[in-house]
Amino acid sequence: MNLIWSGMMLVSIVTAVCTGRVSETVNAVFEGASTSVSTLISFAGAMCFWTGIMKIAESSGVSAYICRFISPAVKRLFPGCGIAAREHISMNITANMLGMGNAATPMGMLAAEELDRENMTPDVPSYEMCMLVVINTTSFQLIPTTIIALRAAAGSADPVSIIVPIWIASAAALAVGIASVRLMYGMKRGQRWNTSLRQS
Image (cartoon, rainbow, N blue to C red):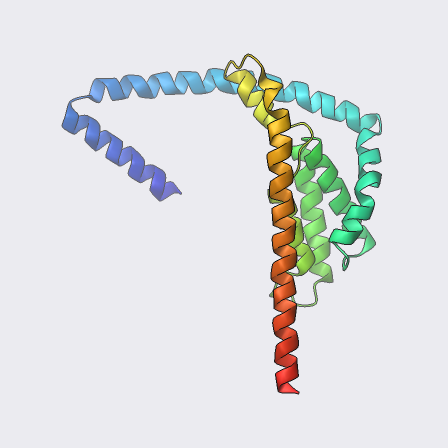
């Protein structure tokens, strides 16, 4: 990634010199830096607000209720994991659903550690580990706080208008991701079964 950014900067500078637009390029750099700082300040304020809302939800027991509500689904999606890993996974999914990314990351890491400890083939990720990665990548968010904060910082007239489209898109992505993991591991089990039959 560093090479890509370095290459883009080098090409931009060379192009500016060749086209005689060095002053415009310098002005654009300073304007971009100023805009970045102002956007960051607005974004930080919005994130503080939504983080406070999520903390209220956590303290009032809403997140714990959601965790209990999704527990049966977690058991079906992660049939081979232990109780400790399942609890961490439930908390991780709940935090992601509520837009609490800072809380979701440590829970996801703890869940991954538990799943790695339970994995019988350390060099190969288990079905549960792959499912955890996919669910975190395509996580369904009830309140997409980051996108809302970015839209508010950019001056959107209605920052929360994208909630329903995000629900639809993230639900579709989550369904495709789960189906893909199940399909791939189903095919792998089928290949192992055929191999064992040929060997016998």
